Amino acid sequence: MGAKENEIQRKKSFPTSVEGAKQLTKDDITRVFSLYDRDGNKWIENEELHGFLKDLMELVQEDYDADDIEECKQILLKECDLNHDGRIDKDELSMVLISFARVSRAEDIPLGKESSSPKATKA
Image: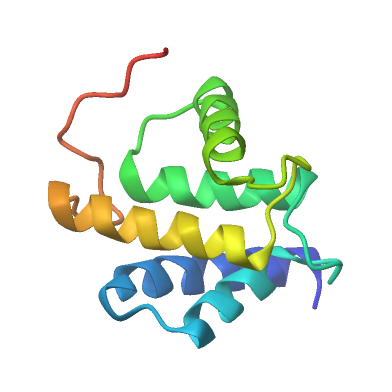
């Protein structure tokens, strides 16, 4: 699959997968992981991680920039990269998706639309 087709597939599948996160299954996690682990090396890293975070940011806010993505990356790696190798494996991705689903439900974030809650402040 070419890069453009892969990007289109990610954009179609990622929101659907996360919106259904109330009943997130191993198959859902595997499917999302496969969409971002484009080189098949069992990690989401570098540009793959950037693409994942960009898609995630699009779900929670319309107005974001490169600094927001970088801040999100630093938080994600600090909180979810359990072995501190700078990349995300499938178990770590599971934590991210489950946490996102819980926060989305708790804050009643309308997925795919700009969040009405204020932007997080930098720590």
